[in-house]
Length: 389
Ligand code: NAD
Ligand code: MG
Image (cartoon, rainbow, N blue to C red; front, side, top):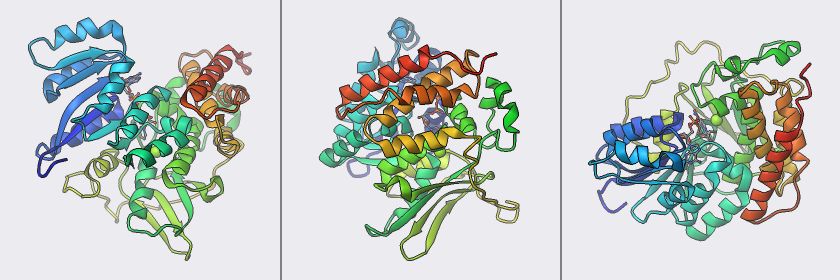
């Protein structure tokens, strides 16, 4: 941003949980942030409503079938309307955009995220899947362009904040906290009967359907382990997961001298979103504060690897490297979608992920990774549900 001019922000995935909360944060800082572009997948009415309120320069709907409807809804507003996934990617590269909020869900966010990084933008990254699929490519692109990637994911925002000002080589371990999801205490024998409604009802966070199911299977934490590997340049062995059901301690950095730092606060995604938008500054805001006299006990326990096999599969993929995380992610996206439509059971999700993981093969380029992504999707889509009676 130039001088005192507001930062120009493009919100990709504006109609989702993170996108909506990003607009809430931006509304608190009209002098510092100007939303100049919005993009969404299919929900054109909500996108039009946002655009009428925020008045960006550009709005893009990924699904081209809704271009006409969106144009009509925004007629006379002066907002420029476009459609298609290429148009979404072009928003991320717009010369006047300073900050790209990458809040698309799934591997669909990869191309626009990579484009923003290649264009040297500040990227407020919620779309963890892009680092899971192509972390090495994103890292290399950032090194070339000088793009700054600031995490929005609450655990990674916590780690990022703990690491500010710390010298290179000072990290021993990163400890990612996990709420444990809605089934932390549910008997494993009943996991077959888990319904989509039960799986999307997260105890501490209100999020999109896909990440909610990921939290229920704990694949979300597995994706976050891989995300942490690329954001912070650590090995799989240096990343640990601990279950912390209260979601007050958002994660912990343990340093080589035995000292540790944690970042804490009420579970509210608007805080890490704001941290990313304001970095390296901090802006005063009325988000809820922690009442230290009312947090009750803060507890920590190990992950039950038998009941939540997805976390181990994600570690396997990270250790295997190459395209294995891309295959894991693609199969998981298909497995979650199949579970949400009632096509397979909750306990099929890790099985379908294993089927997809087996399709991984050497791939380093974007096209190679996307080919693996496609093959893993086909494998997970074709595999029969194994636990269906
Ligand atoms: P969501 O399902 O609520 O929203 C997804 C958004 O992406 C929607 O606006 C949708 O229109 C858009 N979208 C989907 N496909 C698209 C495409 N091809 N082109 C353009 N837009 C497209 O999801 P969410 O919960 O907001 O999560 C978004 C991302 O943030 C995910 O990667 C998730 O893992 C991550 N994240 C979310 C939370 C949270 O609290 N919701 C926390 C941490 C990380
Ligand atoms: Mg998280």
